[in-house]
Length: 201
Image (cartoon, rainbow, N blue to C red; front, side, top):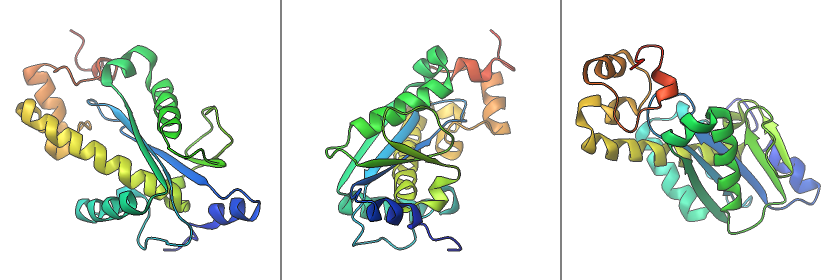
């Protein structure tokens, strides 16, 4: 890895903040399904090799790492906001609610929260890190957990709604997915505000 992804954690530990939580979201952009956030507090004396931005890992490697993260985490929480609520409050507010819910769900209160992305006003002592899932170990762990959770959820939804191919594209706006929406119409999982450009009914 060409970056020290423990730099932020070390900075806060040196300041006496021992419980560093990482939080990340998955599913901001898809046309269907919820946005999912994970928050984790990881032990700093038992680092898991290979943790990075979940998008840079194969599905198999993410599954393997998620299992180890779940096993080793000091505290771990997953929270989701439904496609219906995303339509009601908009995706930015949904991500804020999702991240807040994930951090509040931790069994241990963190001393500091590291969050991926830009400042969205989380109600915690937080440092926001652009590309944080790559630059921060704890955010990377959260990214992997959230991605595996949401991918598995969308794969389960594919059984209920087989015509859309959710197991393959996980709800993202691929050409095949958009073509199916145009052909079959949306299902209950589709975010109406995300498909209005090509489905205005």
